[in-house]
Length: 124
Image (cartoon, rainbow, N blue to C red; front, side):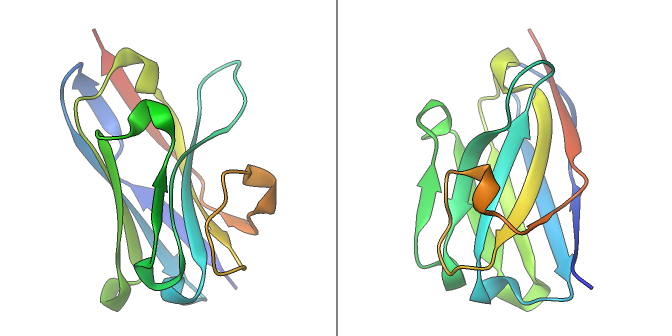
């Protein structure tokens, strides 16, 4: 059974940093595409960053480019999202997801497994 567990969310002031983690069980991250998505109240789920099989390629949504970095620790079967220079508009529930194809995608509908989410709150 595949299970994804996110952690690392919390409350920070604007300009602060957080590091989200997503640990998987039941599959090996490095074989698949991984994505971080976020959803703010009343808004659609949106792509934040993705990483392809084995960390071969990474992708970021334009609004987080240069501030968010996705990475993978294969030995720990963990994907990270380092978030720097956080802004109030980054506040959302953040989800990690696995896409059984080898590449990440910006479309949340293409992902097969999801974590429960972790809340990120950014105060101005």
